[in-house]
Image (cartoon, rainbow, N blue to C red; front, side, top):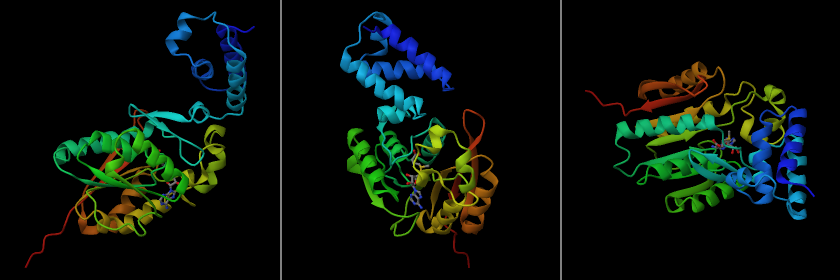
Length: 293
Ligand SMILES: C[S@@+](CC[C@H](N)C(=O)[O-])C[C@H]1O[C@@H](n2cnc3c(N)ncnc32)[C@H](O)[C@@H]1O
């Protein structure tokens, strides 16, 4: 006979011994999910006996977490900007850092009047759909296209769009960078893979063993996709904004790549920091060049 309290205590101790960062929080989330209990139930009924089926589920979760699989992957869902996204092995586990990109876009939206008109958004490398689906939910007149090189990720993104009520304003397309993306957009957003290939092995097991390689690997210097996006920028966004997430120390290089590609069409450059005070995204405004005689 195992009580909730016993199961929790044991799991916390095992996760701690394995060197896992947040053993208490993780043990609570996994035990609650295995037993089908809310956080409140768990506080109110610590002596509740766990049934064999609940213990069996918890054992599976325990083994997966001890193998360093993140809790969000075990449970197949992640909170992003206040909404729950389903994830699977084909999608990046959306990170809180990426909420900086969403906030940057929403500030631009307020200044540019995007809440009052039907803007078009392109999200390159959508993964679970976290960025595009969030923006469509926050900007009710907007519509958009989400691309990825993974069919399975696109299916997951489409499911998230459906569940979060924005599917009628979203299209999903298998595309590499801007190849074959037609039309023009007010906003291009992307959280592309930006880890230099040689640094992937240095990442934590939670990341390198569970996030898909295609979501991490940014080529030799981590900047490959920024170059591809910059090449097509002024065609895709003739007068509007591109807001891209960046990795550690990449801000200058990314700005230079976009400046060189956009030339006289580049109007404004903004670098935004995340809550950890790291440079996290670059926003570029393009404008049409006026013909003078
Ligand atoms: C870092 S993940 C970001 C996922 C999601 N946007 C998020 O922020 O959670 C990058 C995504 O880009 C996709 N990807 C990689 N290379 C790509 C390319 N050249 N064109 C389009 N998508 C690409 C990957 O499959 C992955 O889903």
